[in-house]
Figure (cartoon, rainbow, N blue to C red):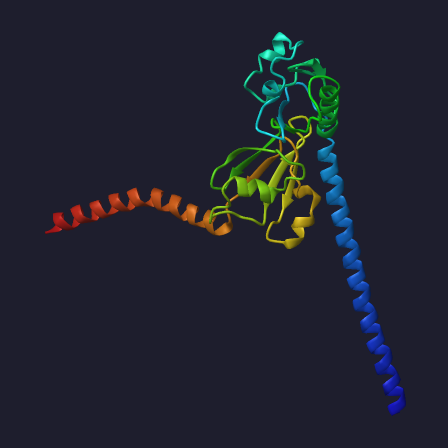
Length: 259
Protein backbone atom coordinates (compact mmCIF):
# COMPACT_ATOMS: atom_id res chain seq x y z
CA UNK A 1 0.00 0.00 0.00
CA UNK A 2 2.84 2.34 0.89
CA UNK A 3 4.61 1.37 -2.33
CA UNK A 4 1.49 2.24 -4.35
CA UNK A 5 1.16 5.61 -2.56
CA UNK A 6 4.82 6.41 -3.23
CA UNK A 7 4.38 5.69 -6.95
CA UNK A 8 1.31 7.99 -7.08
CA UNK A 9 3.27 10.71 -5.31
CA UNK A 10 6.17 10.45 -7.78
CA UNK A 11 3.81 10.59 -10.79
CA UNK A 12 1.99 13.55 -9.21
CA UNK A 13 5.22 15.50 -8.74
CA UNK A 14 6.30 14.66 -12.30
CA UNK A 15 2.95 15.94 -13.62
CA UNK A 16 3.22 19.21 -11.67
CA UNK A 17 6.80 19.85 -12.80
CA UNK A 18 5.90 19.03 -16.41
CA UNK A 19 2.89 21.33 -16.23
CA UNK A 20 4.97 24.22 -14.85
CA UNK A 21 7.62 23.63 -17.51
CA UNK A 22 4.97 23.67 -20.22
CA UNK A 23 3.50 26.93 -18.91
CA UNK A 24 6.94 28.55 -18.77
CA UNK A 25 7.71 27.41 -22.32
CA UNK A 26 4.31 28.65 -23.46
CA UNK A 27 4.84 32.06 -21.84
CA UNK A 28 8.31 32.25 -23.35
CA UNK A 29 6.88 31.52 -26.79
CA UNK A 30 4.21 34.18 -26.30
CA UNK A 31 6.84 36.72 -25.20
CA UNK A 32 9.08 35.90 -28.15
CA UNK A 33 6.10 36.18 -30.49
CA UNK A 34 5.23 39.58 -29.02
CA UNK A 35 8.83 40.77 -29.35
CA UNK A 36 8.87 39.61 -32.99
CA UNK A 37 5.61 41.47 -33.68
CA UNK A 38 7.02 44.65 -32.11
CA UNK A 39 10.17 44.43 -34.23
CA UNK A 40 8.01 43.87 -37.32
CA UNK A 41 5.95 46.95 -36.47
CA UNK A 42 9.08 49.05 -35.93
CA UNK A 43 10.47 47.81 -39.23
CA UNK A 44 7.22 48.82 -40.91
CA UNK A 45 7.58 52.34 -39.57
CA UNK A 46 11.25 52.40 -40.58
CA UNK A 47 10.07 51.61 -44.12
CA UNK A 48 7.91 54.75 -44.27
CA UNK A 49 8.02 56.09 -47.83
CA UNK A 50 8.81 59.77 -48.24
CA UNK A 51 5.88 61.69 -49.71
CA UNK A 52 5.26 65.19 -51.12
CA UNK A 53 4.95 67.87 -48.40
CA UNK A 54 7.15 65.88 -46.02
CA UNK A 55 9.82 68.03 -44.38
CA UNK A 56 13.32 66.59 -44.12
CA UNK A 57 16.24 67.64 -41.96
CA UNK A 58 19.62 66.84 -43.49
CA UNK A 59 22.74 67.49 -41.42
CA UNK A 60 26.39 66.61 -41.66
CA UNK A 61 27.35 64.53 -38.61
CA UNK A 62 31.06 65.33 -38.99
CA UNK A 63 30.61 69.00 -38.06
CA UNK A 64 27.94 71.62 -37.45
CA UNK A 65 27.96 73.07 -40.97
CA UNK A 66 24.92 72.77 -43.20
CA UNK A 67 25.11 71.32 -46.71
CA UNK A 68 25.00 74.87 -48.08
CA UNK A 69 28.12 75.78 -46.04
CA UNK A 70 29.94 72.61 -47.08
CA UNK A 71 29.29 73.22 -50.77
CA UNK A 72 29.93 76.97 -50.69
CA UNK A 73 31.41 78.15 -53.96
CA UNK A 74 30.47 74.97 -55.82
CA UNK A 75 29.22 75.69 -59.32
CA UNK A 76 25.87 74.30 -60.38
CA UNK A 77 23.82 75.31 -57.34
CA UNK A 78 20.31 76.04 -58.53
CA UNK A 79 18.25 79.04 -57.54
CA UNK A 80 15.83 76.72 -55.74
CA UNK A 81 18.68 75.15 -53.79
CA UNK A 82 20.07 78.55 -52.89
CA UNK A 83 16.72 79.37 -51.32
CA UNK A 84 17.59 76.90 -48.58
CA UNK A 85 20.75 78.82 -47.66
CA UNK A 86 21.30 78.88 -43.92
CA UNK A 87 18.83 76.06 -43.36
CA UNK A 88 19.11 72.29 -43.08
CA UNK A 89 15.40 71.60 -43.67
CA UNK A 90 13.93 70.71 -47.05
CA UNK A 91 10.32 70.25 -48.11
CA UNK A 92 9.55 67.54 -50.61
CA UNK A 93 7.86 68.98 -53.69
CA UNK A 94 4.83 67.50 -55.45
CA UNK A 95 7.14 65.80 -57.95
CA UNK A 96 8.99 64.04 -55.11
CA UNK A 97 12.16 66.15 -55.32
CA UNK A 98 14.12 68.38 -52.97
CA UNK A 99 16.55 71.15 -53.99
CA UNK A 100 20.12 70.56 -52.77
CA UNK A 101 23.05 72.91 -53.24
CA UNK A 102 25.57 71.53 -55.67
CA UNK A 103 23.18 68.88 -56.95
CA UNK A 104 20.05 70.71 -58.02
CA UNK A 105 16.77 68.84 -57.70
CA UNK A 106 17.10 65.31 -56.37
CA UNK A 107 14.20 62.87 -56.54
CA UNK A 108 13.68 61.00 -53.25
CA UNK A 109 9.90 60.56 -53.23
CA UNK A 110 8.96 56.94 -52.59
CA UNK A 111 12.24 56.19 -50.82
CA UNK A 112 12.67 55.26 -47.16
CA UNK A 113 14.67 57.52 -44.88
CA UNK A 114 17.74 55.28 -45.13
CA UNK A 115 17.44 54.93 -48.92
CA UNK A 116 17.18 58.71 -49.35
CA UNK A 117 20.19 59.36 -47.12
CA UNK A 118 22.32 56.78 -48.96
CA UNK A 119 21.23 58.16 -52.34
CA UNK A 120 22.14 61.76 -51.42
CA UNK A 121 25.47 60.68 -49.92
CA UNK A 122 26.32 58.82 -53.16
CA UNK A 123 25.46 61.85 -55.29
CA UNK A 124 27.59 64.17 -53.16
CA UNK A 125 30.44 61.66 -53.11
CA UNK A 126 30.51 61.66 -56.92
CA UNK A 127 30.37 65.44 -57.02
CA UNK A 128 31.23 68.29 -54.68
CA UNK A 129 31.88 66.49 -51.35
CA UNK A 130 34.52 63.99 -50.29
CA UNK A 131 33.30 61.15 -48.05
CA UNK A 132 30.02 62.81 -46.94
CA UNK A 133 28.46 61.49 -43.76
CA UNK A 134 24.89 62.73 -43.52
CA UNK A 135 21.97 62.27 -41.17
CA UNK A 136 18.45 62.51 -42.58
CA UNK A 137 15.31 62.83 -40.48
CA UNK A 138 11.69 63.18 -41.54
CA UNK A 139 10.69 65.88 -39.08
CA UNK A 140 7.14 66.39 -40.35
CA UNK A 141 5.93 63.05 -38.93
CA UNK A 142 3.97 63.60 -35.75
CA UNK A 143 1.47 62.23 -33.27
CA UNK A 144 -1.05 64.14 -31.18
CA UNK A 145 -1.61 63.50 -27.49
CA UNK A 146 -4.69 64.84 -25.70
CA UNK A 147 -6.18 64.66 -22.24
CA UNK A 148 -4.47 64.16 -18.90
CA UNK A 149 -0.84 65.01 -19.67
CA UNK A 150 1.15 68.05 -18.61
CA UNK A 151 1.42 69.57 -22.11
CA UNK A 152 -1.09 68.18 -24.65
CA UNK A 153 -0.43 68.79 -28.32
CA UNK A 154 1.57 67.53 -31.29
CA UNK A 155 4.79 65.58 -30.75
CA UNK A 156 7.25 65.02 -33.64
CA UNK A 157 8.27 61.44 -34.43
CA UNK A 158 11.97 61.89 -35.07
CA UNK A 159 13.07 58.31 -34.44
CA UNK A 160 11.90 54.88 -35.51
CA UNK A 161 10.04 52.81 -32.94
CA UNK A 162 8.72 55.69 -30.81
CA UNK A 163 6.31 54.28 -28.22
CA UNK A 164 3.39 55.74 -26.28
CA UNK A 165 5.66 55.95 -23.24
CA UNK A 166 8.07 58.14 -25.24
CA UNK A 167 5.22 60.41 -26.36
CA UNK A 168 3.89 60.75 -22.80
CA UNK A 169 7.38 61.60 -21.56
CA UNK A 170 7.75 64.29 -24.23
CA UNK A 171 4.35 65.67 -23.20
CA UNK A 172 5.58 66.16 -19.63
CA UNK A 173 4.12 62.98 -18.14
CA UNK A 174 0.68 62.00 -16.86
CA UNK A 175 -1.29 64.15 -14.44
CA UNK A 176 -2.64 62.74 -11.17
CA UNK A 177 -6.06 62.54 -12.83
CA UNK A 178 -4.89 60.26 -15.65
CA UNK A 179 -6.32 56.79 -16.25
CA UNK A 180 -3.30 54.79 -17.42
CA UNK A 181 -5.40 51.64 -17.79
CA UNK A 182 -7.49 52.82 -20.76
CA UNK A 183 -5.21 54.81 -23.05
CA UNK A 184 -6.90 55.26 -26.43
CA UNK A 185 -5.04 55.28 -29.73
CA UNK A 186 -6.93 56.50 -32.79
CA UNK A 187 -5.12 55.68 -36.03
CA UNK A 188 -5.90 55.14 -39.70
CA UNK A 189 -6.79 58.74 -40.51
CA UNK A 190 -10.24 60.05 -41.45
CA UNK A 191 -10.64 57.40 -44.14
CA UNK A 192 -10.17 54.33 -41.95
CA UNK A 193 -10.23 55.37 -38.27
CA UNK A 194 -9.59 52.62 -35.73
CA UNK A 195 -9.46 52.86 -31.94
CA UNK A 196 -7.28 50.64 -29.75
CA UNK A 197 -7.08 50.54 -25.95
CA UNK A 198 -3.71 50.09 -24.20
CA UNK A 199 -3.36 49.32 -20.48
CA UNK A 200 -0.11 50.99 -19.49
CA UNK A 201 -0.38 49.69 -15.93
CA UNK A 202 0.25 46.19 -17.33
CA UNK A 203 3.96 45.55 -17.92
CA UNK A 204 3.04 43.39 -20.91
CA UNK A 205 1.94 46.53 -22.73
CA UNK A 206 5.65 47.27 -23.27
CA UNK A 207 5.66 44.39 -25.77
CA UNK A 208 2.34 45.35 -27.35
CA UNK A 209 2.95 46.26 -31.01
CA UNK A 210 0.04 48.70 -30.86
CA UNK A 211 2.08 50.81 -28.42
CA UNK A 212 4.51 51.71 -31.22
CA UNK A 213 3.31 55.11 -32.44
CA UNK A 214 2.63 55.75 -36.12
CA UNK A 215 2.37 58.96 -38.09
CA UNK A 216 -0.81 60.97 -37.37
CA UNK A 217 -1.82 58.80 -34.39
CA UNK A 218 -4.07 60.49 -31.83
CA UNK A 219 -3.44 59.38 -28.24
CA UNK A 220 -6.14 60.20 -25.69
CA UNK A 221 -5.49 59.97 -21.94
CA UNK A 222 -8.84 59.99 -20.15
CA UNK A 223 -9.53 60.84 -16.50
CA UNK A 224 -9.53 58.05 -13.93
CA UNK A 225 -12.69 57.09 -12.04
CA UNK A 226 -11.76 59.09 -8.95
CA UNK A 227 -11.21 62.26 -10.97
CA UNK A 228 -14.47 61.75 -12.86
CA UNK A 229 -16.37 61.20 -9.60
CA UNK A 230 -14.82 64.30 -7.99
CA UNK A 231 -15.65 66.35 -11.06
CA UNK A 232 -19.27 65.19 -10.97
CA UNK A 233 -19.48 66.07 -7.28
CA UNK A 234 -18.02 69.48 -8.03
CA UNK A 235 -20.52 70.05 -10.83
CA UNK A 236 -23.35 68.93 -8.53
CA UNK A 237 -22.10 71.31 -5.84
CA UNK A 238 -22.04 74.20 -8.32
CA UNK A 239 -25.68 73.50 -9.24
CA UNK A 240 -26.88 72.93 -5.67
CA UNK A 241 -25.12 75.89 -3.99
CA UNK A 242 -27.39 78.61 -5.50
CA UNK A 243 -30.46 76.57 -4.58
CA UNK A 244 -29.23 76.20 -1.00
CA UNK A 245 -28.47 79.90 -0.87
CA UNK A 246 -31.98 80.77 -2.00
CA UNK A 247 -33.45 78.26 0.47
CA UNK A 248 -31.40 79.62 3.38
CA UNK A 249 -32.32 83.19 2.49
CA UNK A 250 -36.03 82.28 2.35
CA UNK A 251 -35.72 80.47 5.69
CA UNK A 252 -34.13 83.51 7.31
CA UNK A 253 -36.83 85.81 5.92
CA UNK A 254 -39.55 83.44 7.10
CA UNK A 255 -38.00 83.24 10.59
CA UNK A 256 -37.71 87.01 10.89
CA UNK A 257 -41.29 87.48 9.67
CA UNK A 258 -42.65 85.26 12.44
CA UNK A 259 -40.99 87.33 15.19
